[in-house]
Image (cartoon, rainbow over all chains, first blue to last red; front, side, top):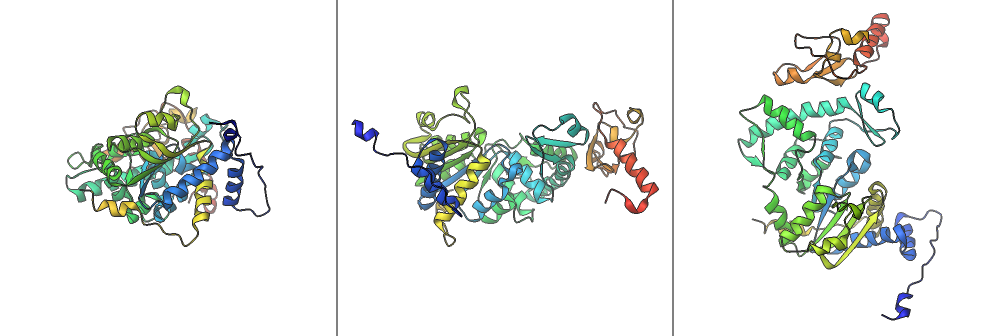
Length: 337
Length: 77
């Protein structure tokens, strides 16, 4: 490399204009190309490339309290617009989706609240969000009864977590629900750590009352399905919010399918130095064969509640209101046995 | 606290809030197949003291008193 190659692209200063749109701001960020602004602009470009690539199947990996914090509608809309093809999520996020589907709420609170007082009032805290216990309890009660009905209707059949997600979505009427949207659009929701959530407690409640007719869920049943999705899809994209088990599930399916990921966006606050997966760099992911060495990839260090809506808004502005996407998954599904 | 010495669903270890502060969801009753939604100020023979106190009994009593004194202005639905 020559010296002039290193100095080929000067930083262009960000210009703020009245009434500028989200995408216009992202294009200014791209001109800067620096720090978080440059990374966020790159993430927009990669998401746009994923969507415009007709052979790309897009996996959204979701960890952290995204739904309680306000990303529920963003995710449900992505499903309804078929801008993602599979959701891999902590079950806890679906618990919170379920709570709102039943009319419950999450409330703006404060990170410095008196937690003993919250305990005494039966109010739970998720950083600066408050959730009243009764919304959880009503969900427990309703969902335990739902599990009983699902078990009865499936008559001893063992479900995968994505089949259970659709069974739940089928029984919820809230059109803003992620579970409902996924059921209607036939987008799979994989919950690899299903029991590590309120669903685990709910299943225990249900099983204690229905020992002869307990809902059966096999954590391994869906493994082949997600691997086949990767294997049959010409290209695969991954968007990670947070990290954890959902990110690992997507990446592990990619390597098991002997097919690295082609596009990757990771939005996280975690760091690589601990050796944990959530903060691991995408270069590290390449070493496992989970991500192709020439993949379009970017890791944005920042609060996903800020970065993800910006990316989705900017890219949808580029695509326009009339844009529709036929998912590669639709063509793939018929090939999956 | 005086309320801790009294036996109420609202200071029993099986209690979760169903409609704060007046209605309790009793996990014990649910598991037995009985109606799990009970009054905070009620109790049954399986009452077990909770490990950490909350405001359920105190606030339910205040509510009950307010309703008694001014039935048209109850704080609960």
